[in-house]
Amino acid sequence: MLIAFKDKSLISKLKSQLSEEFETKDLGTVKKILGMKIQRDRNADKLYFSQGRYLDKVLDLFNMGNYKAVFTPLAAHFRLSAEYCPQFEEDIERMSNVPYSSVVGSLIFAMVCTRLDLSHAVSVVSRYMYNPGKDYWEAMK
Image 1: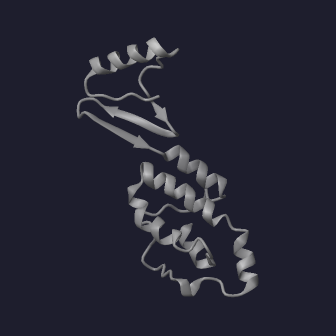
Image 2: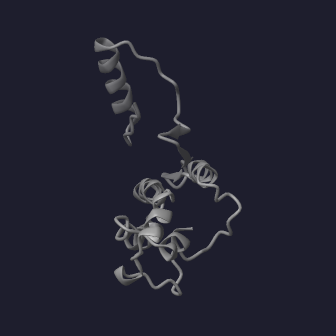
């Protein structure tokens, strides 16, 4: 469980109330939660969350660890629309072996937690989960 308040006395009060009802263990200042790294800047009174390690694992899981990073997700040269969805059974079958929806799900988790910059790109590529084509997979990568 992660407890966060501006006032440390409120944290202490909640901890004591919880320990009266449950067996608890204080693990100290949090460094990670749900795969996210947490960094604090006490002077600026800010928290920073990072999912770098999670994203590295996702890239490795889908054999994309050696792909070149880009600063603009979903570059302008990708023109995706329903007309590019596979029409022939062999193309549909080939794309059924591609983990398209799993990658989209992984990106959604990253987008919701820390990578808001992926919102537009994830929105676009998730529109075609029902029948993604080769161009969609290239855009995803």
